[in-house]
Each structure stands twice: as C-alpha cells, then as structure tokens.
Length: 237
Ligand code: UDP
Image (tube, rainbow, N blue to C red; front, side, top):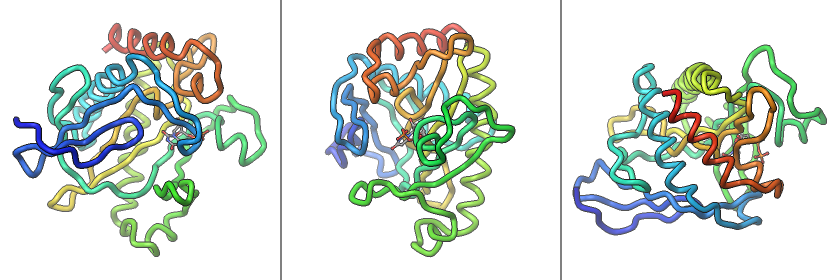
C-alpha cells in the first residue's frame, strides 16, 4: 500500500490518498480541540490510543454485524480505511445525562435513562454543528429517509455492544458521537473514530471521568485518563 497526497486535515486526524482509489489512510494526531475549536491543546499519546482503541472497537462491532470503514491497522497512528463520503450528521447516543443534554434541559449529570436517546447535529463548523431533526436532515438532502433509518438502527446496535463491552472493563458508557459514511456502492458504514475524544466514559465505581471532559473542563490528569481507559480495554478484550 502506497501512501500518497494528503486529502484533508481535520482537528484530530489527517487523511491521505493511497494507490487504491477505494482506500485511504487515516493518521491520528495528538492535537485536541473543544468548543468548536475555541479551546486548543495537545494530549500527549492521544493519537496512538485513539487509533488503537477505535480499531479494536470497530473490529468488535464488525463481529457483531455492524459494517465499518475499518480495513487494517498500519502502525501506531495510522489505519487503512475504506473511502466513504461522510454523511454530514453527528449521531449522538446517550445512556446517562451529561454535557449539552444537561445544559439544554437544565438537569444534573448522571441521570440514568430507562432507554437510550438519539439525536443528530448538522456537521457544519460555521454554524456550530446545530441540533437537527430527521425531517430537516431529509429536507437539506443530508441523507434520505431510508439512510436515516439505517443509521439509527446501526447506532443503537453500536450502543448495545459498546455498553456491554465497557461494562466488562469497569467503565460506564455515558454517551458518544458516531459518524457514518456511504461507500461507492451506496452502503451505510460506521466511519470516523470511537475513542475517549468521542465518548464519555466514567469509572463504573467512582464515576471518575476517563475521557475528553478532563481536557474540556481543565480537570487535569488528561493523559492518565486516556492511558487508564486503554489499559482497561487491553485487559478485557
Ligand atoms: N461529541 C463529539 N464531538 C462533538 C460533540 C460531541 O465527539 O463535536 C461527543 C462527546 O464527546 C460526548 C457526546 O458526543 O461523548 C455528547 O456530547 P454533547 O452533546 O453532550 O456535547 P458537549 O458537551 O461535548 O459539547
């Protein structure tokens, strides 16, 4: 596999073309941003952890029947993935109240829901990723109705599998964000990453935050939290 020109540079990852037009290489950086890019920093070693964790979880999900973009881990920071066109929706599943949910509805963090919730944000930095409903997404042609149904079905499957997996590691899956892509033959697959950057992960016993909230909220111990959650994953998979 030959790495070719950089196609894209995002906040936490770079994407490179390869000699195969259906495959791209994702390279994970240690750069961290929050609040729509307003807060910037570095989390040392994060790129390696997010790459390895995301790949392990995608493999687990593939086994459970969730199609993903994952092809092959190339090295500590780089992974070969299927080239997809990203559906411009952030798909957020919540099991427990936290973050923007708590803020928007004026409730404390930590309320355990009877059933998981789903919501969509329109992926658009200029607009600040506004909350959007399925009808609006169809009206804006971000996805069609069938695609949205498929995204919902897969997102809840991801939740069932990840919640159970993390519980076995002594970690509570509070909420997370997914992105989906469309392959050249029109199939919806899970894309982007699953990591402490995109999930809220709390220690099941102490409720200590083991995710990017430590960076967002200046809680300290950011690197240690990422390392701890990776260690738990390594011990339990
Ligand atoms: N999230 C993300 N990227 C975003 C927004 C949210 O990965 O641009 C993740 C976040 O880490 C959390 C979940 O989605 O696990 C729900 O985030 P929330 O809507 O509460 O927003 P936040 O409080 O992070 O602004």
